[in-house]
Image (cartoon, rainbow, N blue to C red):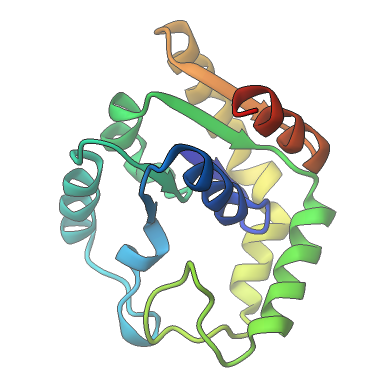
Length: 166
């Protein structure tokens, strides 16, 4: 299970891990959003995530902290990409420009990349609003014996891949 702020590199790491392990990738964004960025009801979303997490093997890419209870018990390991805000914001702006009006490979069908101030605010405030709760949850999971990797830079991600999958 790979989590982290938008722009931290979850999809890039998912593809690298999939190439090394042969495990299929589940991009949660592809299952969350409907055409035109339509969001499902909470009930439908939980049902989808539960079914996805019940699959035999996967690499699951996406934060969606409201679904941790359904995913974390099934995850063999959790990778938290804990990158600085400036790096995540830069990457989001870069990909928005690169894919403007087109679908990114990890995004939902018929959800073209767009400039979204609400989303940029989410990225900008992630470390203050979302990260503290995620860190508490990861600590609790680690105490239960779950393997947690907290990677704080592209260099650490590269080292993780080299050491774990030479």
